[in-house]
Amino acid sequence: MNIATSFAGLNMRSPLIVASGPASHGVNQVKLAEELGFGAVVLKTVCSEKYDNMRYWPRPRYKLLDWDKQIGGRSKQFTLYSYEQGYSGTLRDYWDLIGICKAKTNIPIIGSAFADSPEDWVNLAQHIEQSGADAVELDISSPHRPGSLGFKTTFIAAIRSVVNVVKVPVLVKLAPGPDVVSQSVAAEKCGASAITLCNRLRGFDVDIESQRPILHGYFAGVGGPWAKYYNFRHVAEAASVIKIPISASGGVMNAEDVIKYVLLGASTIQILSVIIVNGWETATKIESGIRAYMERKKINSLEEIRGKALRKIVPPDEIIKWSGEPKNGPRNEWN
Amino acid sequence: MGRVMSGTDKKYVGLNPLPPDFVRLYPPLAFVFEEDCIGCDRCIPLCFFNALKMIDKPEHRYKRVAIVDSDNCTGCGLCFEACPTDAFIWVPDKTIGHPVPKAENNMDDRDI
Image (cartoon, rainbow over all chains, first blue to last red; front, side, top):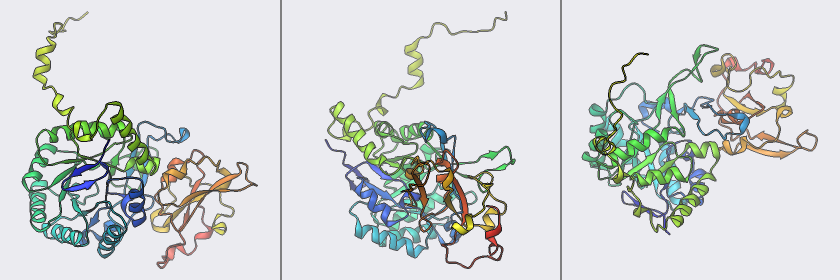
């Protein structure tokens, strides 16, 4: 039984990846991720110099919504409301971080970058490559992105220019809408090696007592177990159209969620919120859950079930045809 | 830290409400109000900056309490969300090396 995965030219011993975020901004965390059996780590996103203010994390920066303190976080549904911005060090620190991670660990290290002009994207991606990262993830959909950066006007050019200059695989992390499928197709056409589906949503919440937005008063990234349902759909839709591998991300709480993503065609699965709320040990639980499932279903490699559920998707007109519902018609009688 | 805490009423607990001028005055850290800690361990897995640990304290009602390692605490606020008894409070971060803004000099007398 083997859960090793080949993803965009990277060989990983496990399909689990630490998603870009607070669990991947330090060397010790990467070391820990390696010990716990993760396949790879996507480092915290670094922002170009123009967005230097995104280096500063306000305190506090997290809030758990709908999280029941009294039952110790056994809430099934909650929202992690996060105002954490980009990587907290300088660009120089980030290149060093990649270098040290590569020197001290043996798992693939994926650098993550955020910018707004193609020149900055290229600059960051080149530095990430030169620092020794095994791949670059373009975080073109950061929920904290300042202003609005159009996909067509900015990102097509950015992806193209990055793909032209770096040799390592380029992952493109897309937002959960709008138009995930056409953005995936565009990323594939531009030469991306893989796509990451999806980033967190940009959300907002208001406190009705103080009648102000919660936390620091600005939009924040929201995610949580509920996020998997729309993400399953995005992964399924994208996987049936594009050829490049998909790294799924969003709402994974346990091994079942990981298996669902694999059944829908994802190659790797990025997790983060679950590490934050349940601790790093969750990774080993998820891995043993996957192995137990594979044993029960007599599967030798995840490749055997990848995309299996995808091929069972039934188009709506088929459903109407075979259901032949006899009870349709008007319900207009007024009693 | 003990000096900061003396005579504190727990007016500003958790994230809501934040103390007035919170962002300007504090780079805050989490701090455990020991009388309220029940030693339940729930905050430990939520802190992934290694800033929280349980210590034995025989004289305490529950024999053990959580303490915050102020060097590692990044003030992210997650432990506030975990604590069923609201034992966490904010204290000013004195581990930061940068010059303290003027308004912060007189912190010790403030209600926190």
